[in-house]
Amino acid sequence: MASIISIDYNDSTNNPLLSMTNTTDSTTASILALTTSTVRSSATTVPTTIAIAATTNPPPLDMRTFIVVAVISVLGLYLNLVATIALFIKPALKKHPFYQFLASIGITTLLAIINPISGSLVLFLNSRGIIPLNNFSIYSRIFIVAPSYCSFIVTMHTLNWIAIERCYESFRYPKRFSDKYIKLLIVLAWIIAVAFTVPIAIYTHCTNHTAPCNTYNHILTPHKPFWISFLALNYFIPVLSLGVCYAILMKFQCGKTIVASFEILEKKREEKKFIKLCFLTTLIYTACLTPRCILILTSVTYQNKLNASSAGIIGADRILSMLYLILLPLIYIIFNQDIRQTYCPCCHQSAVMPDNIEGDNNTASEKAIGVPEKDDDSL
Image (cartoon, rainbow, N blue to C red):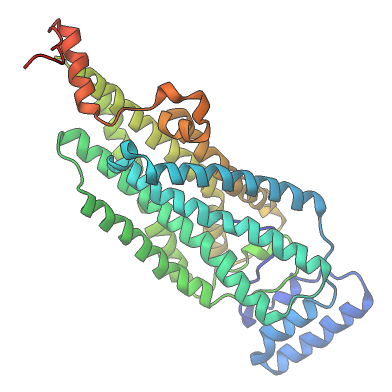
């Protein structure tokens, strides 16, 4: 959810000129002083005047940061794109509710990758010349701000639906969520995401300067109650629900069960594998996005005053918000052989799951209890 460019979402009352003076020459400093008097005289010219003052001296390109972000973005794009394609085309994965939810998370992860790629592109173009204010503002709202928050909200709610679905199937087996109900929950998560993302994008004022903390100076816009409801509905309540669901699942899995057949044993093993995959996916994503939520909560509590003490949290957010783009597909590869085969077909030809899973389980159970196999030519 972090980008390597700075996006200033402040309104005219916060005087963002105090935090954006990254200029080096006296000419730009005098322009900023002139701009301050212009701001005091006319509030309507604040965003345009600020952006013109900030773009008079474009910041230099940090090539090391650009290369690191580009490598992580390309690697994350490849891993997530292949995993998402596998979730949509593999018949064995399309039939299971968990992997249908996971396909939605794959789409949101691809959406989140737009953020660092767009940030790298804007920084590169800005180092070569001045980007027009209107184009830069529209580009930042559509390709940087909106994908970040939309991906975050959809993923958090989808992880919550996964935990609820796992609890439902564990206690109501063999009943499970229908495909229609799963699609309805996924659409609901996207509706909630759009409802919160649109106001954030509309009330965004973007400037192409590189002050380190200005990316996070937006969280009192549009209003403090908006961000309180944002954190409550999209972070605290889902995290609480996830904790309760996985506590119930862990207690249920630790209970003693009497294994009556080989098929039931395989079912229990598959269930434990799904729960481990769900739990690790939830843990990694929540841990990587927690610093951003801490920044929002801190800024709302202390009236949007982020100082040098927030530098550690900001740095952790920028690293972790890109790290999970690689960690999540690696978890899918470890726990699912169909996805592994998509990445390396030549090495996993024998690991392909059969289409008729139930028939193979029945055959295996017959072998386990000593039932003779039927001849193919017998009637």
